[in-house]
Amino acid sequence: MTSRPTPPILPDNLEVFIQHVHDHPDLWYKFLTDVYHFADSQESENISLHQENASLTHELGQTRQELDQTRREKESIQTIQAYQSSELKEVREKLERASANEVRAITRMENALENEAQARRSEAEAIKAALPTVNTPATSDPITPDVKDNTVLHGRTPTLTSPAPESSISRSEKIPDPEKFQGDRSQFDVFASKIREKMSVNYDRFPTAQSRLAYLSSRLEGRAYLHIQPYIRNGIHTLKDYEEGLQVLERAFGDQNRARNAQNDLLALRQKNQEFGQFFAEFHRLALESGMHNDALPMILE
Image 1 (cartoon, rainbow, N blue to C red):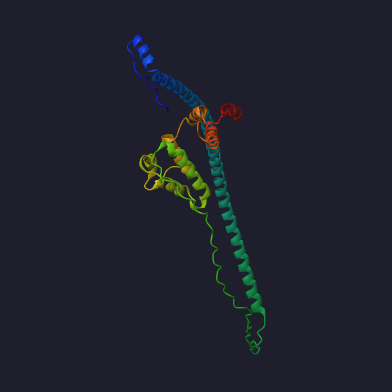
Image 2: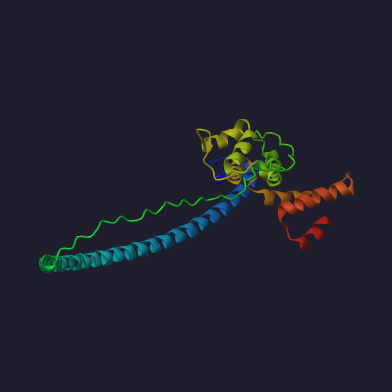
């Protein structure tokens, strides 16, 4: 958040104010410029807060609808459970009555079968008693020799093969590490660009978010490291990935008015005594940073 600008002085009367403006016009010009930028940033923040409030209000309404739906579903489930419980109780009572009747029927059937079996045994004994007795020589059953089937196992001894050696995995060629960043605002953009280039080319050397964040913090010193240190707990980074770490650093050391400053530098750029190639390279760099439309660039170059 941009801090509110402070006027060069707080005059006691109009004459002091006019005299100070006459003596220090540059200070009052800077103050008015800062006031304009501050009002512009406040307007943007108000719009963002309004949009965020509308989004939260919409989410709150959806959450309330979901809660009402969940409450209705819970009540419906409770009604169904009560009905099922009543039905289950009735079914259990029916099963208990049916089981009692079934047990009695089974008992009667078992008694009838037992009586029938007893009658058959008595009939068999009566028939046996009525038959004449005949003496016959005892015979023995022939002895059946045991026959063993000799099972012949046919097969081959499995050939043991050693596992193939693991193929070596080639890794990306390591590019040089960026110089450690200590908090110099003029060097932040270069540092951030080199970090992103390192992660893009040597992505296979940093397979996890923790390894990428650890590498980023290892390239920080002094004030710069102090801004990342609160996000480290017991050696574990709590940020999601290195891009979020760069965002933390950009808020602290980045140029928040990069495009506007680049436009001002572009408008003030003059060739003077330098070679045209060097002048045009600086012109091209500022044009890219300013984000100005291509149609306006030839007029500025003239």
